[in-house]
Image (cartoon, rainbow, N blue to C red; front, side, top):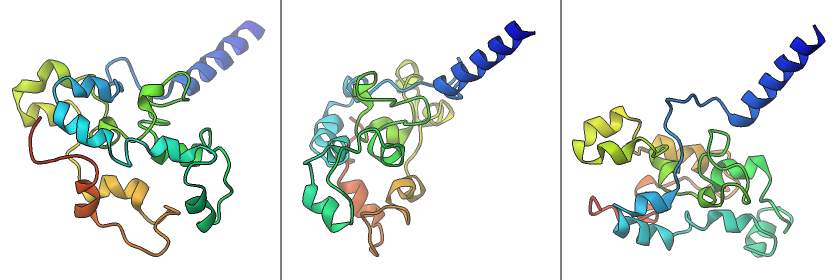
Length: 175
């Protein structure tokens, strides 16, 4: 009986640590994999605040902004409340910590468009197949998960979807 209980507890812990993704679910691959086919979009994204958003959680970075919003200038790089919006896939099988998943620090392609492991094989089959495989066609709803009412950075301002999307990367081409 004791062995069964230990096995059950171990299984619960493993399930909790690995998330709820099953073997058939798409996984996060990191923006460098997206770059192979989307070099132009990657280059413009890499210069954006989204790409560098994890760095803003570090002590000494954006210290005045943190202070103006009522936050201490301390290290927030392990704070789950912050990580859900400053990383890619936190709590969904993506970013876990900077040591183990450094390619998912910051808000990258998959934060907006979903985990990319299923896209490479079907990339040239058309948009419908990509959407069926899990590609998220971005709408304001997805942006508002981080840029909505809970964001400490809005402070009474509303999120402008069109301007926000324009700041992420060049959307004028497919590549």
